[in-house]
View 1 (cartoon, rainbow, N blue to C red):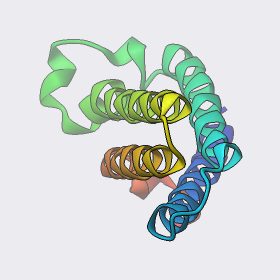
View 2 (cartoon, one colour):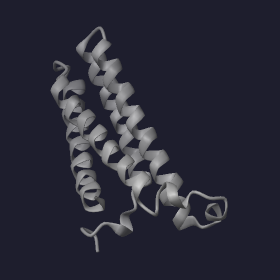
View 3 (spheres, one colour):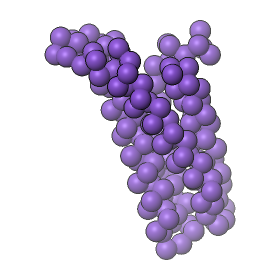
View 4 (tube, one colour):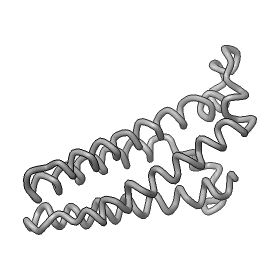
Length: 138
């Protein structure tokens, strides 16, 4: 399950970058809003959330290690609190951005909303990825 979560993380990061780049081009060149591009990032984020929640509730690094004693252990705290919380915040930002863009009155506004919210979400997500555990980087 951990390998699936790591693989989906790479897919999510690529999907977000692609969504941000294409939406930025559409925004700055006043092109129509492409909801399918934003949907790629949205679906990738929610798929990753589902796998992450399963892993969180079944892994010894997740909910099982949630204790007051582990709050002073930065490694344990990262896995049971910081990483899941920041990922959840990032996915909430993506969800809000996608939903607001669907209701936007004009393509320009929809592109702006997706561009800003997906970029903020990407920054939040990148801030709490456990880079040292990725086998791609080792």
